[in-house]
Image (cartoon, rainbow, N blue to C red):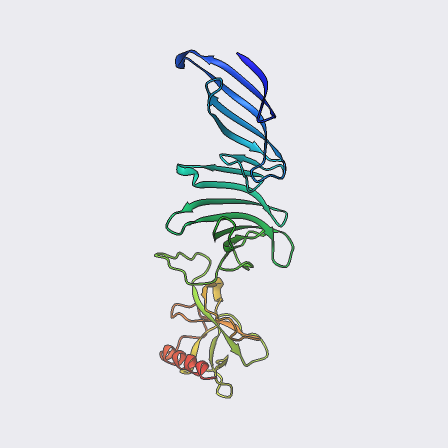
Length: 286
């Protein structure tokens, strides 16, 4: 075993070696002190080599700025791992606006550029806490496109940075099976022309004086019935249809399905579906 304090290119180096009988050669490790690639300061390097004076393979570097590189002499963050075939893969722990970020990248030969994904930690829009963000970008240091966010309150947003529910998707979604366990009604909010809320399960009709708005039905077997106010008997809306920028001040959810729960005192009219179609047409031309 040997411990040799020497110099390499006029810079100090410590070599630690031991005879390896099976390979009939010395194996050694080196702790060196070398100039940073591109200048600017001096780094601490940790290397291995076969043979007491053999070719040195640098394994890790701690730069003068405090970054650590494994597989790279020029780490881009506090911890930068580079490996894979041709050293084409990177994992970099760094900071973005003084907040931690993990960058995963790989060289994309067809585009002659690095493609990367990032897991970041950033302040919630409007403050209040910090969120987990998943992003993609072209180029090792390219512009970041956020794809998903998990807020400090537990909401998940895809296509939005400010989700207001457990899962909010801004865009088109596709699924084979959707199982809803929180409600059975298919409901849609409508404007109500009356000043007081209409009881859940009550039948509603088109208000002739206010097309597109509804009011209570007060007739037995009323053929003008459009539908019923959703929520009777604890049957909540499972799906609520809304459109951004459309309505609704003082609106109520109206059940859009034949199976909706009705008050027992108010039977469903045979022409309900036809009238409901007319109601939607009136809404469309308002």
